[in-house]
Length: 97
Image 1 (cartoon, rainbow, N blue to C red):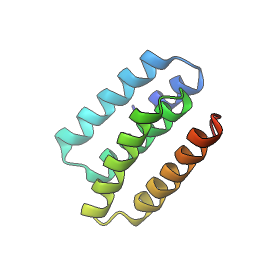
Image 2: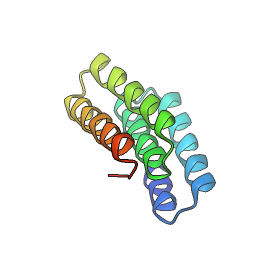
Image 3: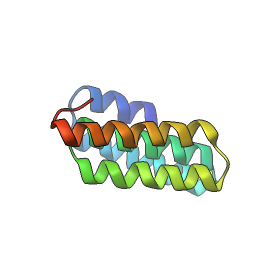
Image 4: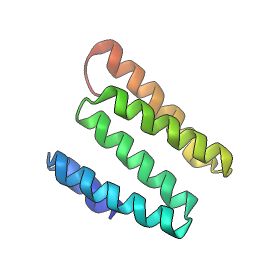
């Protein structure tokens, strides 16, 4: 579902993308899959960034970062830090990165 949500995002189908990502997140949380939950948060942050929804993207990146640190997911920690930096650049320049 996460990949499906990302594919819908790439097609510009905002509402459908977020519905798929929300469903993926619910499944991951129900399973207690912290790595999968971090994947979903990262994908959701990228989708918000894609649609220039800066504050929502920031909330998702920080939630992903907190989860990744809490569960020792170093790849997601770095991805979150990179995402936050890209978001800051986008907010400064006004263009997605």
